[in-house]
Image (tube, rainbow, N blue to C red; front, side, top):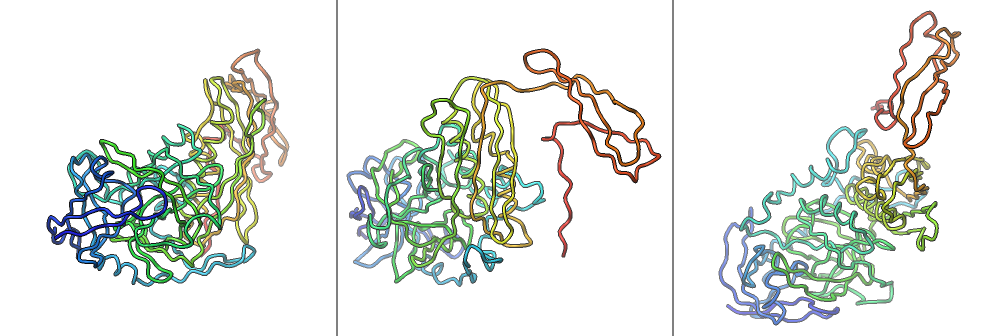
Length: 485
């Protein structure tokens, strides 16, 4: 049997590519077959299987049979697997949790936990971005050996714009094990409400916008079928997260880049439109009328004479894993770019996180980067990123972040100290009075410095011996109160 498919190879208009059916792999996935096809198009003869073509509708005798969705990495032929349209429409028919986005001053901004599929499992007080990524990778069932000959979903390219090398490296570390393919290849776009197609069309390009602004990232794929306000796309999951709420947009394809490993589309978002509302095994489901929660973030950097770009602004998708991940990448990239020097840097950052109905919390981070500037890897371990991850993943109350602003001050010096010794100014003190300690500090360069500090001692310890331990603040976990039932 022969037919054709539709996909965008350049620009915004879908083009036809020829299709020959080779056979059907029955029960390829639970309750799902896979149609095996050979494709023909001048670009596909060179690029073979292309990431970003996922979702391209395939027609036989004028009827849509499914979506281009699977392929072999390092494949030498343009052979792909088609997810049957019936399986995709079944995903579109799934009921969604009731979500209610209230005004920003409401006490309960989101009714219902719509993003459970990407939740962090563990002690929320010890939230860690890399541990979160490992948990999601384990759930995604992506093969640990990517070179193994295995029919797998055509990876969703995550096109990165405005990110430095350190941020791109972190993106690969966090996202590749989940089956996503971070690529430095645009993704920013300059589109607005009036640019690009007015709506989604079968075979058109679709962007899932994770970050937009001075720093950007988007997943690029293809629309399979539009039915009113709803559509199905990709023919495979993006993160297999179930019910979701990620912003989407129409998109433009710049070029199909051929690669020996996996070819992919380069593109950029155009008109913001709707939200990815369901992320399932056979398809993603998008509702063009649904809003997707996002929050603005800014980074301001001081202390770098002559810096041409000191303030960075961007908007981040409100999502339990993607929000802390791309905050780490974006802030780290801004620091790395603005302070780009092969010198010792001492830095201190204050981050304000505003939570709807709960006010604003301020988090302080500091560090020393020897022989270079701090980057996304450093920031991924910051209190700010840990706090955002903990807030979004807390199991007791659905949290809406309104905005995040970070102010970073840098000094080109290694302001580190080694504690040589401690003296007690007075071994006996009155009940309720602080204990005074004399610290002998040795800086990286220069003579020893003396600093006297006061340590509060509760009056109820009167008549007892008190032992005081001194350790760097970064190694001490703050005491916390257990949540009430």
